[in-house]
Length: 101
Image (cartoon, rainbow, N blue to C red; front, side, top):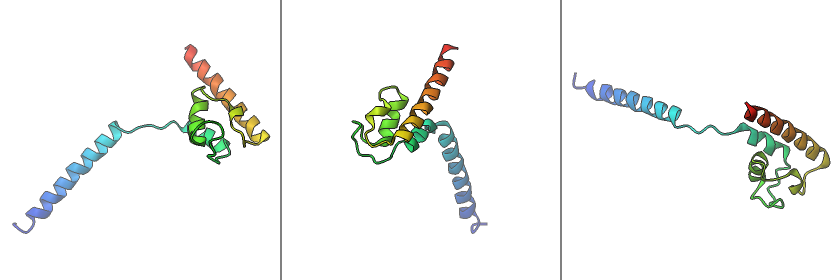
């Protein structure tokens, strides 16, 4: 019996700690806004900083928060700019529709 006690104790300890990690991970997880990824993919992703932001991801945050405009992005191609403006327009309209209710 003395031979089986350490593996049993360690197994139970591992199970309890694993469950605690799962519970803490579930309740304290941070949900990231996937719209930022969608906007960033539509930007040229040069991370040049010509827009005044640290990179395209920061620019995407600014666009999502209405703090930036697409024309700040200097290297964006006209067709990508039009697509991004259309996407943001639909996004802003959807936001406005949910805020009214």
